[in-house]
View: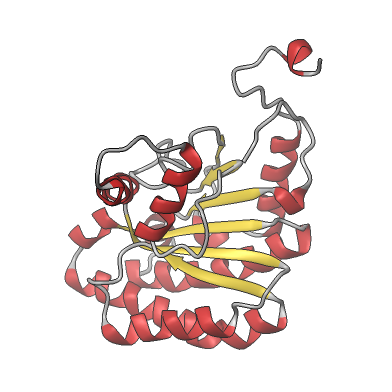
Length: 244
């Protein structure tokens, strides 16, 4: 994808990624168990998808479960995986009606069989969606995705960035070549990528908010998009030269 200096990109061409953080801390502040925070976070997922579609975002990637999250307590991991499966089964009809194509990126060999079945089912049923591409990252690691893609190069021959993007997509179960993230949002007040979208976020504008994920709503997304529109994306160029 060719990149150029731009201040007001068309949202239909915009790829927004969100690192959804803060469920556990939100629950603690409410005097609730961590698991209740994850359940509240699941509601925020639906709100954010609906908001992104209504705002005209072209691609939305939600980073839900990183490879590092396997280190959490087994009970918490099991609940998260159950929530993912429930979400996929419960939201399929709505996603189809909204013409949203869903794909799940990340490893699948460590996921429960029932969750893999739910993933494949919703991917098949929403494949015709054209209003927005929704990517849900489960058991995802940016570094591991790059390593797996590098293994596919095979004979050591040089590859272009576009070719490597296709290899990376294949290594992550993405339906098409990896698309550059334009705006990467992280909720919960942290200021790091946490081994998530390393390749795709190379030129991303970063937006950090203290809002905990369960509280994130359409107004928060709109604020992030407004902030993005005010930024000048140079990609290393000098603006007056890029315009000539």
